[in-house]
Amino acid sequence: MREYRILPEAEMQRQNGFRDKVKELSESRKETLGRPLMAYVQTFGCQQNEADSEKIAGMCRAMGYEICYEPALADLIMVNTCAVREHAEKKALSIIGQYKHLKNAKPDMLIGVCGCMVTQEHRKENIKHSYPYVDFVLGTSSLHRLPELIYTKIKKGKRLYCPEEKEYLVAEGLPIYRESSYRAWVSIMYGCNNFCTYCIVPYVRGRERSRRPEDIIAEVKELVDAGYKDITLLGQNVNSYGKDVRSEDGEMYDFADLLADIDKIEGDYKIHFMTSHPKDASHKLIDVMAESKHIARQFHLPMQSGSDRVLKAMNRHYDTEKYLGTVEYFRKKIPDVTISSDIIVGFPGETEEDFEATLYMLEKVRFDMTYSFIYSPRKDTPAAAMECQIPDDIKGERFNRLLALQNDIALEKNKPMEGEILRVLCDGPSKNNDNVYSGRTEGNKIVLFDGNESDIGSFVELKIVRAETFALYGEKI
Ligand code: 5AD
Ligand code: SF4
Image (cartoon, rainbow, N blue to C red; front, side):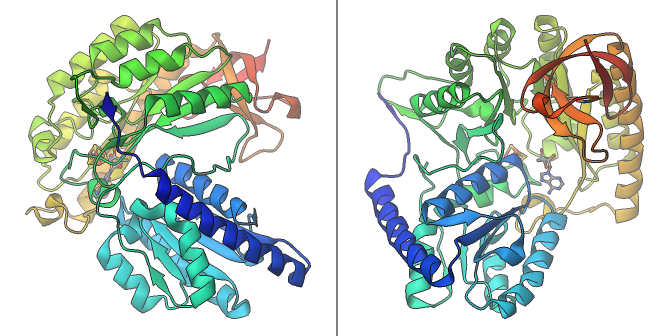
């Protein structure tokens, strides 16, 4: 018997009670106003936040709101914030600042702030004192309590600051309003136990807790049956899936087991997952991927730095030799695997030599893509208190050198794809040009092509005719 840490059913029922009461209130306001109530959900940050926002939107709809995409039209605004870098926090605070005018013009409007930024006490205080028109604040441990907060706010009128739960648990069964009808997120676990010294996540998302495999498999099956083509399994560190679960007989069910079981679901779809931690990426996982039918031949494996000294200071628990070993095993088992990475430049104490070691690793691994970040000190994390913080100009200069090298590598990796025939999932007209359609390969590379509306949400076979650094260009065959 394995014991998963799931929020008790009674609490979910209690929230459903609040949900129904809010729905009744929404119905009567709808009659008075002669129009439906509208909710606007704004998301900052990572895919986990996007997935949470789809649950927020799902809960709003269950409470009688329709979803709108213009804050000025909204009766309820939910800002789902991020805390991973200072820039994300500044952006969220600036947007919340702008909503003051909307609230002045429409005093009945409710504004709620949730997510990682306001799970930090100092930010909760910040909102309390500097943003008096924000009606309620709830952190990541209490997202499921949204109906209770909205009901209490409407009935009592007081501003509310939901305290964090003592134990972070998995809330099953929240309604999800998905943005796309063919790409979907499925969270498989929440939280992080790793405490990388630069990272705020373990402080704002609690300890690791896995969902039950049967709940995940049922969700994926439902999506595949509904025609979803691309499903991304989410967790801060998916490779530790199942490790938090207490088991009487010591029986384990890990991420590789989960992938193998999901792969058995019949249908025309691909599974992606993120994020993996190099310390836990096992051969068993790679073997399952190599033998699978539906697991995309793509791997996001954040390296963060190419210097063993810096990796140690980051508390990453692997060195470059182990990292290279994992990449090598991957390429041996799945020769056409696409590998991407996250890199941080300017970690405290990073010397020119350390930085050059990162450049060296980029040359050695030859990632298809990297997501690069300038180190941003996060309050109360160990790295923020380290000596030798790197000046902004040096961080900026290193960041540009890293990008220049990676752009060269990406182009060199893309060029040989000219002439290949690839299956691409079409997303519709590209952002910059309505006449050009855009899609993504199994390896997450963007392909631009001459498509039409009926391609959206379908796999299209394309011959690659030109390859550039950030995109491939294809023709239908
Ligand atoms: N500064 C800069 N980048 C960070 N990341 C996490 N914390 C920080 C920070 N304090 C990056 C890591 C992680 C990605 C999601 O964000 O590279 O993998
Ligand atoms: Fe942050 Fe490290 Fe956890 Fe990733 S593994 S969320 S970088 S602490």
